[in-house]
Structures are given as C-alpha cells and as structure tokens.
Length: 87
Image (tube, rainbow, N blue to C red; front, side):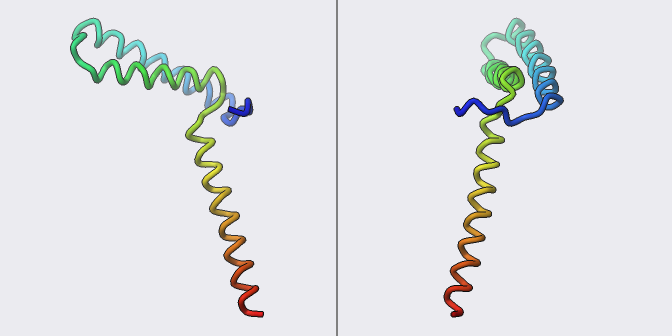
C-alpha cells in the first residue's frame, strides 16, 4: 500500500456506520446459531468495511482506478498506432 487515501470523508463515515451495523448483526446471529458460517463471513466483511473507513483506503477502488487508467492509456496507444499505420 502506498499510504494514499482514496475515499472521501463522507464515504468513510458511511463505511464505518454500515460496517459496525453489520458487525453487530452478525455477532448477534453467531450468539444464537454459532454453527452457521454465513454470519462469520458477514462479520469478516463488515470488519473490513470498518477498517477501510478508518484508514480511508479501499483496495477495490484502487484497482478500479488503475484499471480505468490502463484502459485509457491503451486507448491512446491504439489511436497512436492507427495514425502511425496511415502514414
């Protein structure tokens, strides 16, 4: 991780709020039915969202930004190649 924050303050607060809400719901479900694995999976995903909100860094957002920048650079390369082949 390069240490840059890639989500805004409002987005971070929403992630923290939803993460804690889902984490409390999953914890309550695990108390009632501890043999169910789905509540544990939801608790882990909710914990990830809380962490993303606190750090203000989302790896998925970073991958999407890198992917779009790669696609844009490929588009520029394709335009340059097509103009070079015409000459």
